Image 1: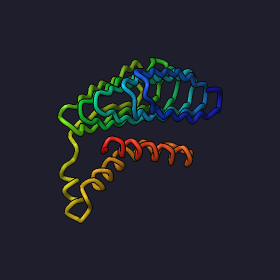
Image 2: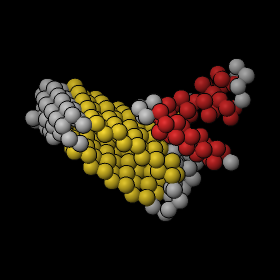
Image 3: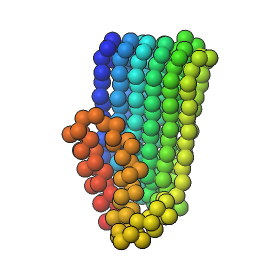
Length: 216
């Protein structure tokens, strides 16, 4: 991604192959911007390797994704944002909803070189387990060698919010609709980051189709 250039990248993974492996390496030069959005919706096994090598100064890097494995499916996301120059900004948000007998892995890393002073980086992974048989393995990492930075990371995995579900039901909303409303609200943070309206609506369409198939 050359000087002053902008790349908007969206990947929607929805297939029936036994395994799907996808790898990207983005190299950013001065003042460049990256917006990467990955939606992993359906396949027996999905493995994503997405890395940004930030060699330029004053860059912006955003890596966002969502995943929704169902029975006997596994989705594995490995990411790295490698800051090597001054004043880089990066933001990474990955969200997952896991259904019965599914599993997912998130291993995201922010690396800040000693030369990458005044880096501002944020990493978060949040997940909802829809069934006790679902398994989530999350490992966010920070590796920092500069001393003038602002970096944070976090991870949270928990059960579906039954209190919020009860709240909506108590106001006359059916359980299926209430459940879908909460799932969409959870995923909207990632969908909203897609700047292109047509692609954003396509993402919403595939998310809805995935939900309908799971509920069958």
